[in-house]
Length: 232
Ligand SMILES: O=C(O)c1cc(=O)[nH]c(=O)n1[C@@H]1O[C@H](COP(=O)(O)O)[C@@H](O)[C@H]1O
Figure 1: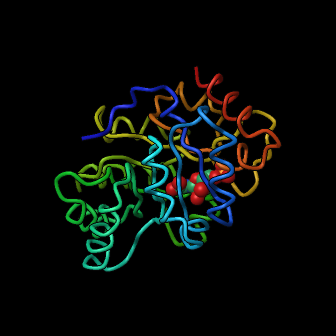
Figure 2 (figure 1 turned 90 degrees about the vertical axis):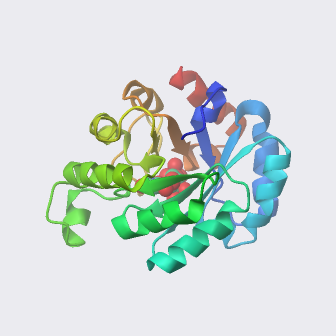
């Protein structure tokens, strides 16, 4: 079901959260062969970034479209079908059962791997309480991971702090993808459930997603190489 990460660099996904395609292309050039997998999220996608998908894949790079879809089933199914035609490796939906089932229908037999976002890594318990979820964040992540597996989803997005319980909920063949990664000493910013690259790998995740620690670094290539070295 899941693409196998044959190149160790594929385990690092760089979030291209940049304001324009020009800046994103310049960053990809600066990083060079230190990264093979890039994520396009709201900021870039809504600034013409979907046009970059073909250019990145033509250059042999993998692409993750992170639009975190969540809508009525029909709209999600059609949206996933349209995104599948772009030829990306991963795309995201929020981990609501109806949404996930619709996404799996839209993906069809050979579409991208759908990742279900369980509880955002910018949420701690107080944020989940405020949103009305009357259960511990770790339990909510595990519940959504089980529901994702039931829906036929290919991978889970969670904090690496939940990786062990998520792995037992979804089994060995589905992917665990973890943002909220910070090398020791880096600014955490708005992330709340964070782990270092080394700790995430030790927890058994498949891919880490890293944005600002690379994109805001004066030397993004060196930052990516240091994270890869820490991942082992
Ligand atoms: O789906 C995601 O990629 C995602 C889920 C989540 O729970 N937390 C999270 O930070 N992300 C994304 O991962 C990236 C993290 O960026 P940095 O905090 O700059 O490393 C951003 O592009 C977020 O949109």
